[in-house]
Image 1 (cartoon, rainbow, N blue to C red):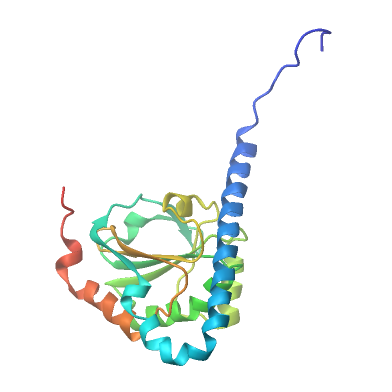
Image 2 (image 1 turned 180 degrees about the vertical axis):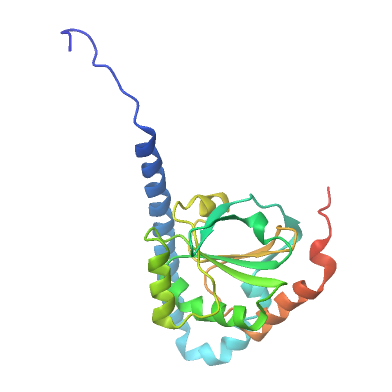
Length: 220
């Protein structure tokens, strides 16, 4: 370097910037998820004596979803299936979708996963699918091992290792679950865990499966 001249600045390589962006996104989600976990544990601890009496009201559909007055457009996010095949949300159009964004390191996600599996076993088919979208960085092996550990049999593996899909969907904590109509529009959203195979939620989802209401075009 020539004395007296300022040192030349070099731009940060793109791969480094991309890795930093992914790490920051994961850190943000992890921090917010940790806060959600703490709140979840606190509510479980303080309400345990009254759990049986409150169970009927805690699972009502009003507590499960924030249902929107009109369906909302969603970005055509990208992810992969358990075989590494690239997919987008558009590939799932024609079905009512329950899109659950989760990770194996998220305790509330782990707890609710069997209820999502039972919901898929009960209602899954050409008209409905539970899409459990993992943001684990370890790839499909990590998800598959977890599924085998707790006996998940009905849910296919879907993965977003980049967290790009989660970011585009506005996910700020885990788990987050979106109810999506046949046209690929968001009907409602739930932040936090739920008993997804409860009678109230099953009835709610069946209503969207059989009703043409969710297929009406958005008002402009």
